[in-house]
Length: 400
Image 1: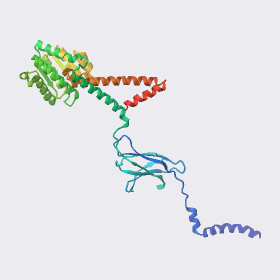
Image 2: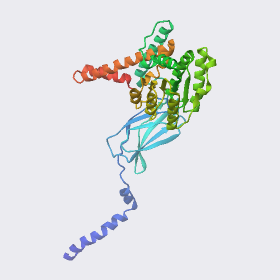
Image 3: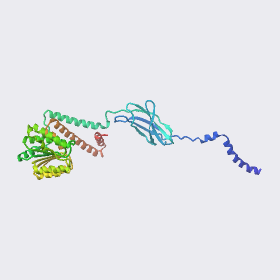
Image 4: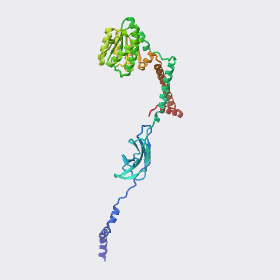
């Protein structure tokens, strides 16, 4: 009995596992099936047309269910009206926003967010629908629309005021007021007038403004019978200058005094042109020199040479780096936008004067707006209501 009592547990240990395995494969298969975890899915999915655009864009937003296992990745699936599904993108886990930029305006799309785990679909969100469309008005630019409307109204008001014959005050610009005196001085001395329109081509706005002033100078030289010399550094500028001077002589009633050869092309090379103009100054010794247009490093070379021959010099440019040289070496200098205001100042034409006056009024409006904004922002640090005013002014001029 003692021997059997010791052997029985050993036999039981050997036989019982085999008996359990022989009980059938079904039990083994049930034990091998993995337990599918609860995977988090997207909730509160919303689809909306992207605002303030030309259409073709739909924004999707959602939140991830905090319960369950976080998915490996999530996919954005779109269904078109026919029901055909298309996976637009597979995004990293935790993403809660997607912008569909491939939508067609006027077409209703249905979206859903799919959760992936181990490369397989583990959950699907509820669906959301949206239609992309274009907006006529950008809500973030209403403030700028208001400001532009005010500017346009001011310009139109002053143009109409000028047309009615009312005198529009424009502050005197010394360089432009001295144009007649400079030409008159050259006439009295029996010396020519030299006009230098800069070194840029006709696609430069400063060259265009220079051509306007050239027309005025040409009329005066025609009236006074003074020789006008115009050396240019671009062939197109030469052709335009010839026509402008010819028109000026025609308006003065002296077409016979126009000499085409006095408007000549020198060279496109910057310092080659400067050397050629300096040669003309030394040989012809003009009594009046106009340097109006775009200038670079040659500005001081030309101005100093003109000063050395004793000419009265009127210069003007919108190049900030060259203005100090003209101020130092010339008698009169048009600074920045004064060059562009010359056409209105010299012609006194109501439309041009009205536009100039309206722009000045608009600039004053902006200056006042900036000052008010600075004051409101500063006071708003201590008094919250003023901070609200500062935010309003900031939004008014901010373009999104």
